[in-house]
Image (tube, rainbow over all chains, first blue to last red; front, side, top):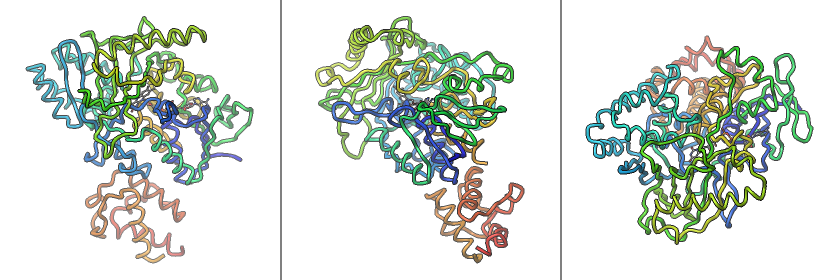
Length: 465
Length: 83
Ligand SMILES: Cc1cc2nc3c(=O)[nH]c(=O)nc-3n(C[C@H](O)[C@H](O)[C@H](O)COP(=O)(O)OP(=O)(O)OC[C@H]3O[C@@H](n4cnc5c(N)ncnc54)[C@H](O)[C@@H]3O)c2cc1C
């Protein structure tokens, strides 16, 4: 059996690409190493419920936005309706820094007026920034790379406001340390602040099942517990993939969502001439990773005085976004109250989720016993910073689980558990291996919607001819 | 297929791609773009659906023929008559 394309990885990018290609009659095989699909946005069973690995919120929500908005375009390519996603909008989120708090919601006006109220005189600057972001988008991000910190600080003259605006955007999609490429900043600015956020009431599972069933209905084949250990390249062309079990599967093309350097492990040829053709430095793996702890609540958070959907906080005026020196940076984080979205009916189980930056080198270097004790220690410290932000919730929460960069590495294969992949992205998805393409995390579009946009985009450009 | 059959086939395809659009009042003489919110990817999808459903190839240089409903039907008729 020969496939038109073998897709490596059944995360959202690989699945979306598979749906698109299979719909147009291509013979597609998706190979996933893990026993479950979803990758960085998968789910597992704990305490009798489905618990999402990642999913705080889906960005780019924008239900009444133009047809040209990313979510609308994506869904048309997949023949999925927004209603099929069963998304419910956030109530309101916050950015909390020492001495200042900004509220924002799916109505961009709120952030704009908040900025003016909290930082008098900065309202006009903020609108100027928002216009710049919009402009860049309407010109399809044609500009070259530029430092977002430089550009934003040249417009917004209040340093604390700059830090506050960066905080959610870096947490939700920055592969590099300290700064962002301005295009990436603009993209996430639009998807978070302008288009807004929402959550599926039953978590990520229904979306994954929808993609899987669409894919299979169009004749696509999906195998889990079936990793790819090697891509066979001959004369600059991928000819076949070899699975972990040693099976050889012939194909006309390969689409890898594993990440560029992760793909290089099974196919060194993808790096062969990259450095010289791109003229750039040798690619380096990302090192931004996180811990995430999940607690079940036995009372609605709102009844305990906490009505926000998400809270992005930093205890320092300067927002530090880099691999921490300590195992966990407990001074900043993201808190998600999964019950605080405008659902049609209550969620089965309200969860409290908490994300903080963590040092992947540390967590991956521990042996089994050390790992267990360190996890306990740092969970306590992390919980401490969490519950000072949401007083009164500790008594109502039961700890379910905590994962670390090592967990992310183990289940998704991403080097350093780097959730947003390597700092340098392969925008066109092209590699030196003529018929091997990169989609997902290292192509450049990040997050739940972004990864699907990436899968569909690369499929369109290179594999649907 | 008759001209009417082709017209219906095109409408079905557009309906699948943009299910929320009202297609009941599409004027066959006016450009699609002035009546329905379709971008260039949507057009490509129409072409690919034609290939998928009817094995009809529309080469890129012929895309201008797909301007309006009547020009599309005229263009496709010789290709689809025998279906
Ligand atoms: C804790 C956390 C919270 C998050 N929260 C949000 C959020 O609230 N909102 C949001 O939009 N995004 C969020 N994200 C980000 C989002 O989940 C990811 O950006 C997205 O899921 C990436 O999808 P992908 O397909 O690009 O990559 P992946 O999901 O990593 O898919 C790659 C797949 O390839 C498989 N694979 C790797 N190597 C091989 C091999 N050799 N053979 C076979 N299979 C292989 C992996 O197992 C994996 O399933 C979060 C991520 C995390 C970790």
